[in-house]
Image (cartoon, one colour):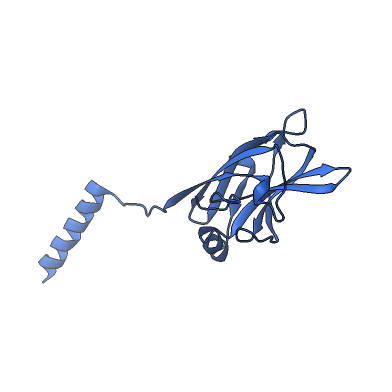
Length: 158
């Protein structure tokens, strides 16, 4: 009996030595979002353009992209809770690097990496998050361009 135990132990040690330990990998989900004023609640007309790519690995969400053509100076960008056609509260602010015109810029992954709760990941996967980009126009106040990471309002996932 002892020799059988030793044989199993030796085989196990040899297997680990030859094959090593296999780390558990987490699935990666990629999202693409194109912001459009027509997806805002209520819809608005704008010449602004924006494209955002996001990657979810486990509970970590990274985001990068660019935008331009804003009709007013850039004010802020956020990820919001809300299904397509619904306005919702802010989940987190995005960090943008602005160009000199203050009407275009980029989102860098290094500045836009977030840890989501399990519930927030579920909401994301059910297309319950969207991006809003805000400009400040002295005549009309806050204007927004919205997108949910799936296409209609730029909802995740696509």
